[in-house]
Each structure stands twice: as structure tokens, then as C-alpha cells.
Image (cartoon, rainbow, N blue to C red; front, side):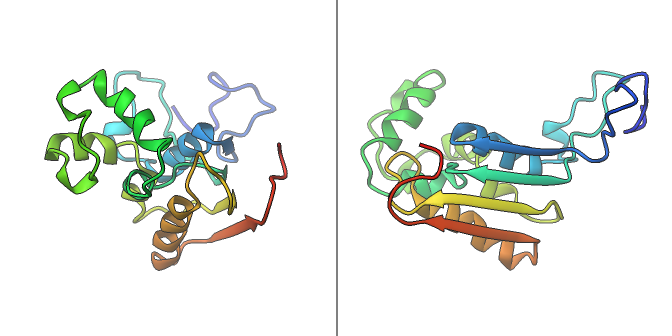
Length: 168
């Protein structure tokens, strides 16, 4: 189906002009959507009516934009969250605290949820917003993503807030 096919989308929606925004884990998902457009593992080839998942803009607030950076911050709140997720898949990895000591298959699984890992040939504009005192999503993870996007000459910007948060 074409991206603007009216059999899938009502006439008032132009699917070639869709942007996404998310906060926290939603920000991570928005970044993943922006970074994985046309990556075979993330596209649906099972549906004959499936359109590309490509979006035209991403705004991400307080996202875990780089899993390895978030894991390595030493903060006690991030690792247990990831370890809880990993326990569903491989409980033997729970005691590992150093990202570099994780088994290669676990690193691959974590990277598959890391927007920074997919920065490359995509041109989707990205706007990141993060509080510098965020205790749940380390600001360094957003910095890592922003640096990767800037190195790829992407249309990207980073908005930092000092103390407090504009949404909470």
C-alpha cells in the first residue's frame, strides 16, 4: 500500500507527515521508531497492506537513548530495571553489573532496544529534551545519542533543563 493510501488511512491523515513524541520509555520507543525505519527486523513483511514505519520527526523527553551508557552510569535504578527484563530471557545474567562482561547474546539483545545503536543512514530530525538532574534516565544516555546523531550530520538538537522538570 502507498503511504497515503486512503483505504488504510482516512483522507484527513497524511501518513507521509507523521511525527512521534514520547516521555521516558515512550521517548525511547519514539527514538527507536525514528532510527529503525526500513530496518528489516523492525518492518512488518507479513501484512500486504503494511506501510513503512518511517516517521518524519521525533521528539524525545528523558529517554534511555543509549542502553550501554545507561547501564554503565553506576546508578542503582537502571540496572535492576534492565536486569528484570533480562530475567525473562536469561536469569543467569542477573548478577553481572559490567556491560562489557555480559555475554554477546545479551549485549545484542540490549543493543536491539538501544536507539543509539541504530543511528546511521536515517535522516529523521530528532529533538531531545532532558533534565540534567534526572535520576531515572541518565542524562549521559541522551548525550550519547545526540553526539552520535550530530556525528552523522543529522538534524538534531538537545534541550537541557537545570533543576526541576518542565513536565513534572
